Amino acid sequence: MSTALGKYLKEILTGSWSLLVGMGITLRQTLRRPVTLNYPYESLQMTERFRGHVDLIPNEETGEPNCVVCMACQKACPSNCIQVEGVKPEGAKRRFPTLFLLDFTTCSLCGLCVESCKFNALKYSREYNLASLRKEDYQMDLLDRLGKEPLR
Image (tube, rainbow, N blue to C red; front, side, top):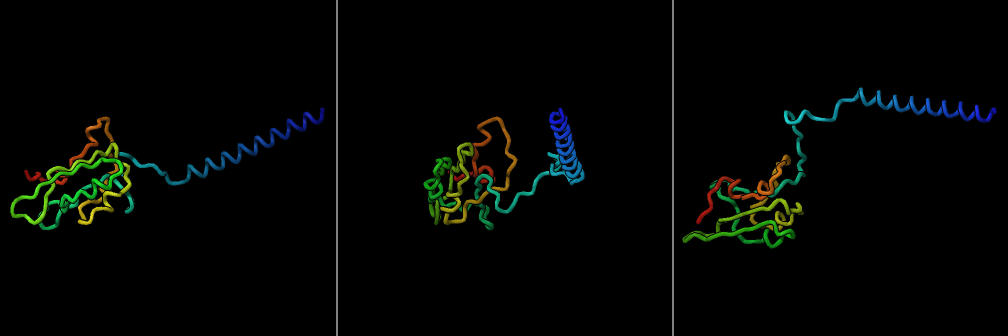
């Protein structure tokens, strides 16, 4: 009988110790500063290395995209999510994009398009809060986002 009583007391002591340890952890966590944000009134600061979707970089002087339609980004993309078309207006020294589409639903954010661009025309956007139930919202016309009308 004494072994059964000893086992019973041992279980009570280990259970009580476990309860005290758990309550100590709970008390320490309640005294800490909260980690959550009051979304949508507060938002996270993205780190410098954050990779959002790809965006075109405009020329500082003209506002036109730096893209010369060399197709390096389209060729480098393993997901085939970039579609670029362009024209060379008469008398112009370079080609200008008439179409620059990004299908973000298939983009793997590998960065090969940004790395392959030799004309400083692509960068990662800082947008991280892209939420939608429609596929069309993730098929982006980057010329439209830049605010430029394509040359026809």
